[in-house]
Every structure is written in C-alpha cells, then in structure tokens.
Image (tube, rainbow, N blue to C red):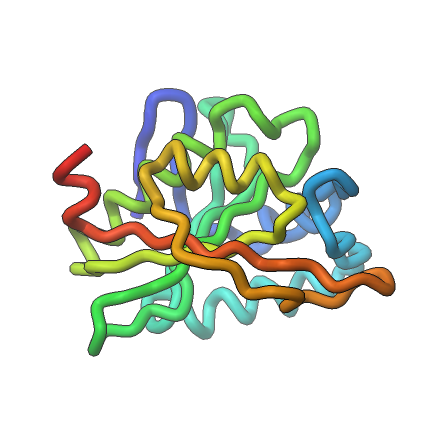
Length: 176
C-alpha cells in the first residue's frame, strides 16, 4: 500500500525505518510533554514488531516519506472500532527541522481520506496536550471540531496538564 501526495507519500514502515525514526526523533519542550524514548536497537525492533502485530487489525501505521524516499515521520489510524466505525489518529514528525513545513498536514489529509473512503470509518478523533499549539492548529485546519477538555488528565514533570479532544466526522469533509 502506498498513498501518494504532492510532496510526500505514505507507505508501510520497514524495520530500518523504525530504527531511523527512533534515532532521529527530537524533543520540543514547547509542544511535547514526554521526551522521546532513548534509542536502542531492541526498542526499535520491539516497536516494529508491535506495528506488525496490529497492522490492518486495530491499527494502520504508515511511514511518511519524502520524494527522496527518506522517512521523516509516521501517521497512524489507531484503535479501529469496526462496530462503531470509529478510530483515533496519531502523527509524529521526527526532526524539528521537518516540523511546521506542511508535511504533517499533507500526511493527515492522505490518512483521513484513507480512513473515510477505504476503511469505512465515520468518526476520527485526536487528542493533544494543552501546550501543543501546533497540533491544535493543525487539527482545526483539517476541520476537526474541538469537542472538549480532559482536565488535568496528564501528569508530567510534577505538573498536571489538560488534554484537548477533537473529532472529525465523514460528513464534515463533505461540507468543507
């Protein structure tokens, strides 16, 4: 499977891609509460195996690749609930230098289209911490609706943080 956009494409992650993402993921204290897990070969291999176990069952996780075939992140449809036609979305861009350049936006457009039109999903949800203004702005740009706040739902670095909940319905795309 390969989803092709204008500047990027989405494709299944290979084991080497998982290692690359683990090694290159950078921490931004302005938008992220949790630091990336420190790279080890074992942790990258475990992540790859986890992906394989749930791929196309409860999750669809794809790498984000540049036109030069460089893996720069991953995007996922997670917690797929076939009974309720719902799922959650996740996105990660590894290097700080690749963030806020439209890569995440294009990847999300591709994966949202896939979820609604190939997986017959009706509702997608996403959540992010109160400090991640980039993710909040991205979700609003994608026409997600802010549905609420889980107050003090995340404890990190001796503080409690609110988590914002967003939702997107298939019919929201048709209206846009």
